[in-house]
Each structure stands twice: as structure tokens, then as C-alpha cells.
Image (tube, rainbow, N blue to C red):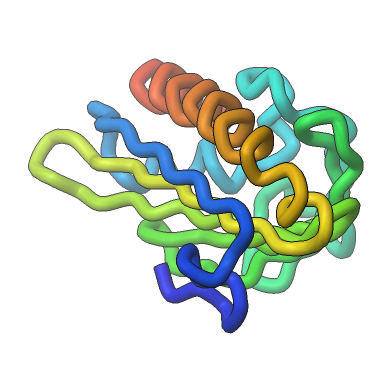
Length: 155
């Protein structure tokens, strides 16, 4: 992923990375990932999702959304949108963050990588807590996405 300036992993207070292999085509994984309004149905660490702008239930470049994750209310905007390969959004709330996803086809399966960097006073002081918390939460997210994508298409 090409990180925005200041959010590169080696320049951020917190960096977390998770990956998983999914036996599904990249387009199906992508559809589950961008259908943000359905996240709370399968990713337990997301709630109160409110899409801003048009009526589409899907993420798109520049699309903003408000949501709750890790107990915090966040406003995010999609800053990278390259279907069905890469998506990233920023996050603003008690900290600033960038969260990216990359889908890499490999024959009949795909390798899914998710990465997040965080900056601000909270990550600077609590990096020792935030990094393992993110890694656990994001592992839940990639495992849940694997289960959904291997099970079929989103409605």
C-alpha cells in the first residue's frame, strides 16, 4: 500500500498487519468488503454505520461514513479505491488512522492483507496497548470476511 505522508508504518506510533488466505474470487471478497452497511452482521467490532452522501450501500472513492469500532465513534473517508484490489480509508476521532486492504489473487485463492497505522497523542502514549488490540480485532475481521466470502455473495 502507498501510505499517505506521515502514516507510513515506520513513521506511525502504531502499526498493525493481518493476513489470511480466502478460497473465493477477488470480486466476491471486494463486494463483501465495500458493502459497509452489512459489516455489523458479520464483523462484531463495527456498529452504528451511517453512510454520508448518496443512497448506495457501498463504499466508493471519497465516500464518507461514520461508525463505531473498538468502542470509539469514528468518521472515515475512502482515500484509495482500486476494485477489486485495494481500498483504504482514513479515520478521525480520538486519533487519526489509515486502514488499508489489499486483495492478491493466487490461483483459486486470494491473499487478503489488512494494515492500519495510527498517529496522535493516544497512539503515542498507548501504543503498547493499541497494537495488540488492533491485531486481535483485525484478525476477527479477516476471519469473519473469509467465512462470508467463502459462503457466497452478499445480498
